[in-house]
Image 1 (cartoon, one colour):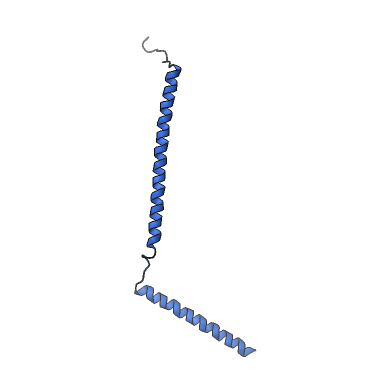
Image 2 (cartoon, helix red, strand yellow):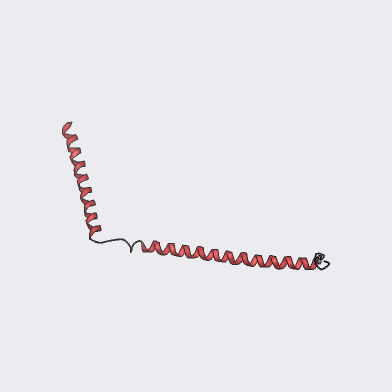
Length: 95
């Protein structure tokens, strides 16, 4: 039973300080490493965003359906202009 009850091990002040400094340096290295990873991820995200912004002009669709839609938009704008002109003429006649 005497072997089960041991006194807690005591450290000197120098040993305690050395241990704390080692742990602090280790934690600081891990913090710097994780900060580096975070900065690298931010850089990759910025690079990906810049590349996708540049691609937007290339990725625009210019197929037959898109051309037909553009023609329809022009027709609608023409009709609106014609209706506006007709409205103005009607107002002029009512005066």
